[in-house]
Length: 369
Image 1 (tube, rainbow, N blue to C red):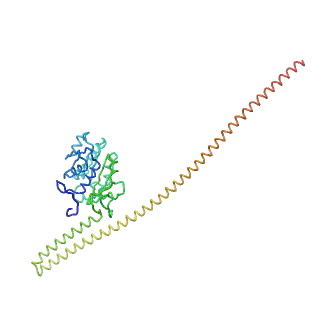
Image 2 (spheres, rainbow, N blue to C red; image 1 turned 45 degrees about the vertical axis):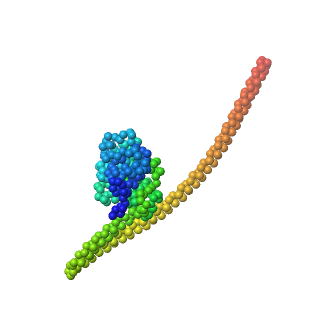
């Protein structure tokens, strides 16, 4: 761990940021036993991490832009680019490379790429540019079947999906989960063509430590102020041994000023702690409101289901009545046909009788004549 409390992992090439190691480890779990092209691995830790996670068939390239211009060969299954922060931090460079990666993803090649967050630690360290959450959403929408992941609290390398609530990591304890909103992500990971593999992997963190991102900056400020105060006290103490009278008064004045600055820093840190507590209380209140809303929606869903069941019963009863009426109508039609047949028979009989009567009258007239 460095003096500013950032976690590092030892490799042959030197000390590597644990957050970067976590991204490569996650990519290795996704792409184990596949043929992978790794680009932008300036520290050399990415290739070692991928190989240790099962990516033994690995091609390491320095310039991904040239590779994309020439086209990735059919013998490779995936492209991993998680290290070249400078290139992906520049908006123009980022757009050009993402367009090329999108074309490769459309050909069926899996893509795993990370973008430094605009408000994350990468920007705070002085790198240019950085992608906002809206930029990343627009970029991930270009890739077919893309999954977006967030990396927050770079000191613990917490990696989770953007479209789901954070799960309990297997190797760490997540406490005080403030500043886990997408806007505060240290890095964004876009994974294309591996949705099923991502779904099988849980949220995780690299270190076996308690991840509390909200207090990291406050602790750093306090440590920096304390170190500054100790250095000032030591310097003034060394000078006080050889000064007296007006010189001692000057030293005491400087000591008071340094003390006042330290007290101001401490007060600012306390204000940040108070704001963090208030933010936590607000989040708890929002959670309670959300639970109440969910309960109300559940009750509405139950009532709607009950109403649907009632309507289905009424529809079944109506269908039964329709069937009965159709049966009665069929019987009536049958009875009408029988009556029509009887009427036709009666008419035939009457016609025969009339014909007989007419014949008898004709015979009687002939006889009379």
